[in-house]
Image (cartoon, rainbow, N blue to C red; front, side):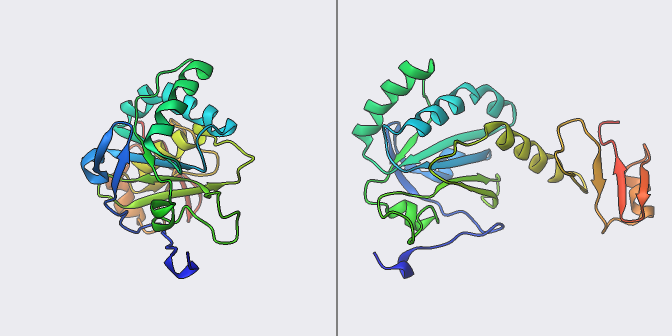
Length: 216
């Protein structure tokens, strides 16, 4: 496969409406996502140790994702039949019941199409990528991990909370923000407009650094 056939995605791009095969059936990605947020994360192969723990963790967090109107879908570069066998191992070793779709991609076609494949890495290893896609199908987050490091799902939840908050409020979330912490009023919002948007008031550290409690 020539590198010119390997596509890249960037934040703000429209995520493609992939036609996928999974252990839960065949469908188009948009039909599965509907009007929800979507977390799409990839794995290099079935029966890999780090990925086994990640799929187990994602399964345990499904109630948290559902609270946030967010669906989960994974991808692994093996067949549907391999996925079914692997899920039995995941359920056994992680104490879960994997019930979200795992996309089959044995020939790396989808991995190449959505930027989960790096031409300078081992030809049989996808880049372990996590995407968060908003209900309007826009790519809002992308994180890439090396094969040796498991994902931090607490961070994924934190970013999802930030994205959902900042989609409706004219704020940004500062470093290490957690739900309930104060946010930063966007510099593009004048003090006059801020008085309308945030009648609870704010602390002005600097004219460009205004901290507000959006929960008041």
